[in-house]
Length: 475
Image (tube, rainbow, N blue to C red; front, side):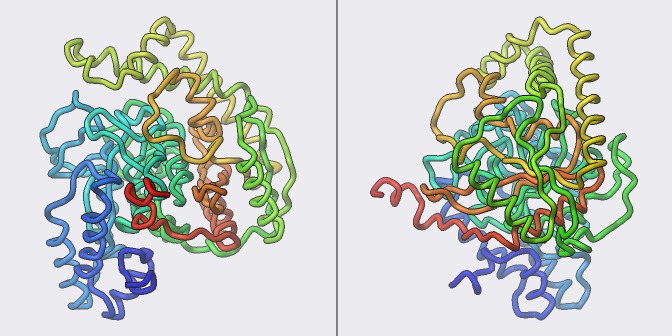
């Protein structure tokens, strides 16, 4: 089959349209996806668990379509769930050998939203242990690899979601993001990764990084991300910080463009995040594309305090708490880096942490003021293309702000919406991306900017048949 006829390579919108015309069935689409999973997942390693009931769910969707009674905007569309979120009937292992293997009884709010719109849950995707780092490996499931090149990581912590999206294991993937864990793997894998405004997509239970973490879509296109967002961004009383959003189709207005909007090209986030020459070039290309679309782009500095110091404390105290709550006899089962960070942060006082929280609020205030002048912010998404999949994790505190997440964690501190948008391939054939950021609760503007960039740029789909281990060894 060609890309035009292979359902596994189609967007959610395309699948839905074909279902509505009776030109394709949800069962046929799911079987096409499962064939790719069987062929490529043995080396990609994107799944923590596959759903044995997926075909039954697809069959129920097909029956609804045949009766002319689809239940929602995602009826019959394959989707995956990161293994930090609860999926009823499956354990939530969080990539760790220390967690309980008992299946949970209740869906997380984001999962419930997808199911309510009729999505077919393909399975649970891998995560770094408790979502703590960017390299895409964990003690429980091993190394997840990038479909663009198996020697590279898909990034993390939403490693399986990034890999599954790039390998076309379905069009829709739920990730989570406490410091870049949606946007980084999206950038490494050539996907669109959406970090929503804090509280926009409800979560329960809250995880280790509750004060800065969100769930969000990872897809191959901006419109699919907005479609998925529409299913996930619904108030849920279980989450005490969930916004009281009414049901909305977030695709509305997404193609209005950016003409007349003011965009700040930002190179400092309280420090100078590293960026390689190809990343610099990608950032300039994105700025030019926005200008050609009618935006007013200028370089500006929001005047933030050093976000490295603030986020390191927020991140570090969460890992120290995780370490202290793990029974001593189980600590050797944890990723060694968690213990290293916990030990380094063990002398942090409550006053130190509360000071970091006040600085976090100062960052949010500074960005709110900055957005009185600018509608949008444009930055890099990652310092480099995808890192080596097999490299050991060394000096994780320094790696956090030098190699992993220096361009992303500031917007977790400020709780703003931020979207990673693929821009093209570098000279080694790996995806590069930029990040667009809007003021708190202006997720609609972030979507518009991401869509404007997407329409002007182009990125092919990864082809694991050409990039797989056998081919890579002879290249």
